[in-house]
Length: 244
Image 1 (cartoon, helix red, strand yellow):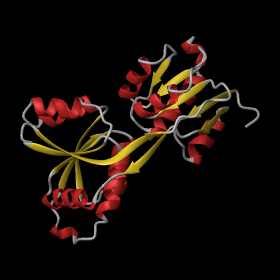
Image 2 (cartoon, rainbow, N blue to C red; image 1 turned 120 degrees about the vertical axis):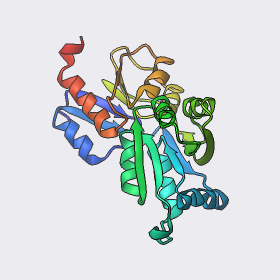
Image 3 (cartoon, rainbow, N blue to C red; image 1 turned 120 degrees about the horizontal axis):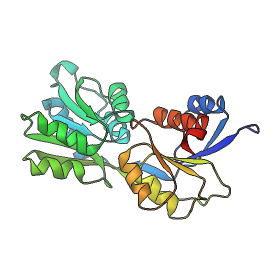
């Protein structure tokens, strides 16, 4: 896009529709993956998680990656009528969207903007003695720690590994989109940013990770959604004078 007024790097591949939407506003987005997600579900863990699904256990997801990996492992091969209706608590945005698209025969009981608020929501129900938390091997402690402090048992099932794939930048950008704390760590392991570059964070957890490694301006998406993150960046550059 030779006539673009602003250039953004996404640390994760984006749908072409979002790239086109940004281009219509004079913002060119290019992408470079800084992490790779590798499923780790063993046959034993798959069987264990499927039993929770059949029993109608309370399930917790804070990552769309976990949702997609679990859904592929289960295959929904058994008669839905024989399954319990699992209650799901998950983050808003991309994680909720993944649950709606990939996990059938579940009921979304609650959503929140971040893991801390999600744990507090579960505790506020007062009648949930235990949850099954599907997560990556690298995960933050807020949710399980808060639940355990309030006598809610947490069974963690690790379903993927996050592998850093750092790459050194060869040019400067007006903004960089960060979609996870892992992508922040990978990016800054080999890069620094010029002072004018704006960091766009998909949520408060990612923003906190950015605060640890840069003094650049950080703008946070109102919800943890890739669509909203891109729209936030577009709005920023459309109204950049308001931020000066």
